[in-house]
Length: 263
Length: 107
Image (cartoon, rainbow over all chains, first blue to last red; front, side):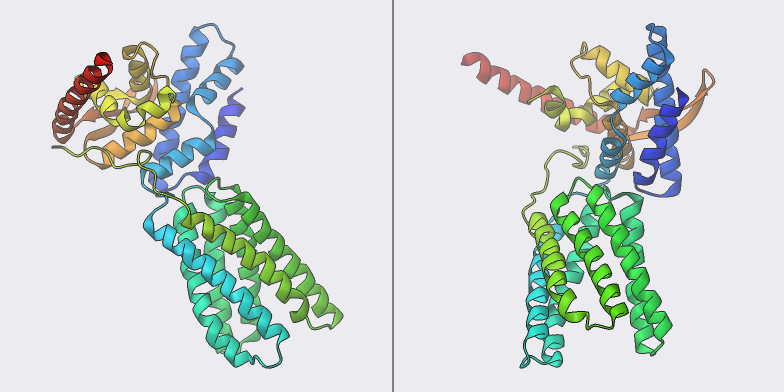
């Protein structure tokens, strides 16, 4: 009975976007709305269960409602920034994959050359990742937003620890980065704003690289040769797919448009 | 194109028009919208609240909590800026609907 309304809020709560007090206000307002709607359906002769079901149905699914709130703030809308960062992501992802594959399998192509070339592509991917976050933060839910923060924390911890030659810190950074990426991809996968094939590919690439990487390390085998093509195909393909999807999006004219200003 | 699609660009002035006469809470606004449109504007109700919040952020509506019938409700009222905006939208709409009617009826 009351459980279904509570279940509704359990589902919508993590996906609401904005300050804590605003999310509280939205929840309280929607709860009041549902209570009024249930009363109305009860007085029309429905059972409590039917009344709650009908009230929830008329309000809309948690995902649609949370998305509508996010979009009303212009959050999660395709913009010029998200389109161009999508293109940057696609170019960067393909570039890294090619450079990575060449570096792994070509004797003439030194690590130094790889680093010089790849840094440009990494910068493009970095721009693209920020674009993904901007585009999807209204729909990726708390899962995706937490994942993104973990990824950033992992990168900073790993980088700073490496600079200081602090191996446990670097290892912890990589673990946090990996967990963050898994959470982030799961959040992106839930979002209706991105092609689920691309996010599934990223998740599969991450899982495969972790399994193969850990497996080969434990077995004492060089992991690079095995993980490089997988990474190139999975991450390169997944990010390029996401990037091209974002690049192909057009700004929506009506939904989330700013309200009319006084003449 | 269904009613929800047609209404998208017009929802905000409609909501302002609903609270023009008296301040109302979200559920009452939706009921009133449904009543005045004779059931034609039967929207997914969850889309109305984001629009109300957007209008409030733009300063066209203001809102405050109020107790009533044992329930706390957020009451929305039209601001002075909202009244001016609504008047402008009404004039715009009247001109537009006259023009559409003229074209359609001549055909």
